[in-house]
Length: 289
Image 1: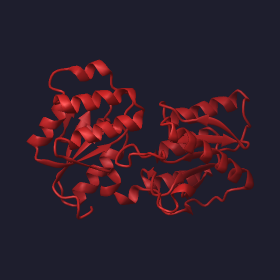
Image 2 (image 1 turned 180 degrees about the vertical axis):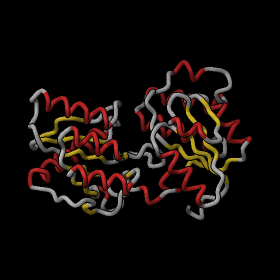
Image 3 (image 1 turned 60 degrees about the vertical axis):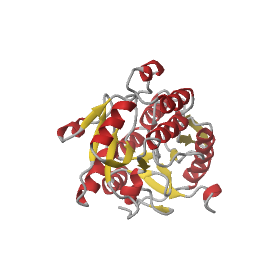
Image 4 (image 1 turned 30 degrees about the vertical axis):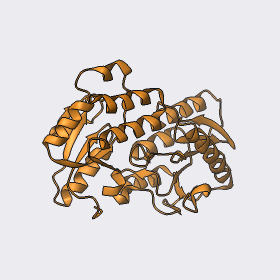
């Protein structure tokens, strides 16, 4: 863990394995993290150990817990399946008026705007929000490289270029972080349903003979305006399984701005499925922008 991250850390846990990975990393360093499960989102394994629990809009309750536990840093880890409803945030005790006003204004924004407002609101109470990758740096996709045994063919390279352009375009609109290209054209864009659901759509398109029976590339990259302390794109074993079921050949992810959950297991699963995984740097960001 970076020497600049001092004090006790709380993990606000959504769904997926990332909250558990962050907690494990902290415990290996002798730290005592506080896990705050988001009701209806956190995985069952979160509840097996010591934890607190809040609803997704229970800002006041979260602040009380953090203060009572002597927390300095907050990690927002894991996904959120259900966007909070505006009316639920108006309940008494959900925060002071200034913080609550900032939070409520963000409800009409996209996911990135809402995340920024949540982070700003938490920090307005004196806590520091840090990214999961600041605690578990090796969770980020490595420098541009081929991570699997399989090599790309010319069709896959063309599909990668098409899917990358599409992923950047929808990211700029705060829609999603992924796209799939088959046969040289984009056939699916990630929306609020997430990557796994997008892959399922592609599998259904294949069964319906709406796209080529074989091949294709999934690209995942951060949005141009991405708030890197939360909601970085990620892949894991489920991504491999669903990509294979969808008949894809390649998964390409942005280096340093995409998380690979369970790295060794994920690469092993890709090799076994005959999938090719590559990391890349977005051209516009190669100079640090």
